[in-house]
Image (cartoon, rainbow, N blue to C red; front, side):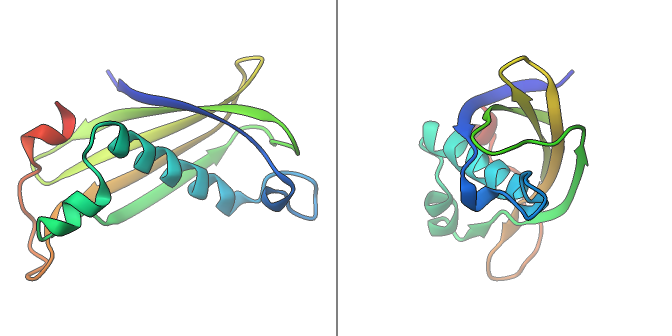
Length: 130
């Protein structure tokens, strides 16, 4: 079962919208990554802290399913879930809902914990998900 890690809300803006009048597909990843960083920051486990420790946490895989379009000035809630945790990696899922609780999109990102110098996999720190 996926564990809910964090929730946030946003309202789409004109710079998020493409020529068809809906959120540009790449903006979903922008929103997802902001949610990921906000979750880390809420736990005082910032990306700066990770980098200062000599580690990196790159995204090695992404995928998205767009269920229904999101338009201009639409209020959206993003729910962040931990769907898989392994020794060196984890998978996050981002679910996008409108104010009527309709699922608009689902994104996934897979992150791997690496030593910054050697690029070798290292074990995830226990405190990352405490």
